[in-house]
Amino acid sequence: MNINFEYYKIFYYVAKYHNFTKAAKVLESSQPNVTRAMNCLEQQMHSTLFVRTNRGVQLTPEGEKLYMYVSAAMHQLLTAEEELADYSGMVHGSISIGASETALNIYLFDKLRSFHTAYPGIRLRIYNHSTPEAVDAVKSGKIDFAVVSTPVEADSPLETRMLRSFREILIGGQSFKELQGKTLSLKELKNYPLISLGRETMTFRFYERLFLSYGIEFAPDTEAATTDQILPLVRCELGLAFIPESMAGEALERGEVIQAVLKEKIPDRHICMIYDSQHPLNTDARSFRRLLEEDCEKVNTLNRGID
Image 1 (cartoon, helix red, strand yellow):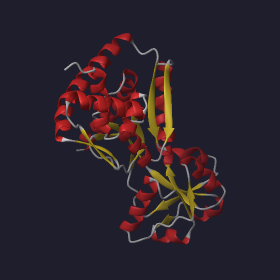
Image 2: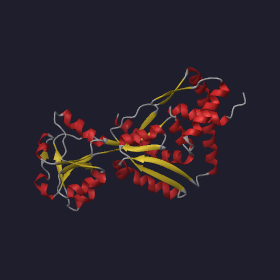
Image 3: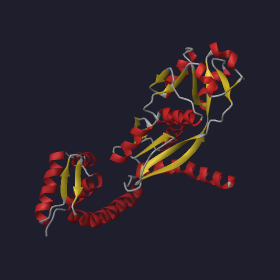
Image 4: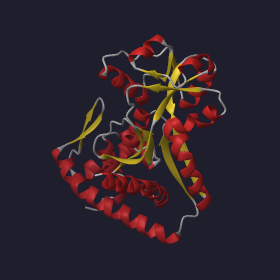
């Protein structure tokens, strides 16, 4: 059979994402072109490869068998492309990264600056996502990988790599000065107004679960859209808030906010990287990921030392 090899490439992405539209986006093509190519492939192979559903497509037994061979070949070809691209050096290219507000503020900005200094010709596309949105974007192939804060819910083939830990502290404005240095319990916090990120975020779920573990309802009076909004809201005396310690440092030193001490320990959280283990990255994205993975190695070394 004299089949256009481009059809196999299109078939690979349709089968991978179980969706014609998503495959078209990855291929930078249109959905009608993808559909036309798959119809031609089915006609030339005299087999039905897909069954259309409301959510996309499912592979038939014949389609599954073809995908087994095509995916193996595609991985070989993509790996070869990556290795050859390494020889040309990184002069021009692009990377797409999804980042949660917290990860961006306390971790990713420094990494982006270092990478951009070393490779100024590489375009960086940074998408501001909540952690669940970032995970979905990785899963759909819209971004190369995501850097987010825990907790994270990511299923195979997505991989999660811990990059660094951070702790959050409880702060308030000057109207809460009597709480400075005072030890409060989580139960006592219900007597004070609280500020939090919105309930669609993993940060909200983190504190909701923490409070519930002590039999307390987490019901903030003010919900912010981004981490950047929390400190100004605290300065405006709208309530107490949990915030990464590094983000509150300067405001604490200037005396703009106070820190309250909690009786219960707030578990450390982590900045982590999420990527699709089955989705090959271009040279630029691999290099940036290696930069982040240096921190993964440091975390693993530290954990082995603790063990």
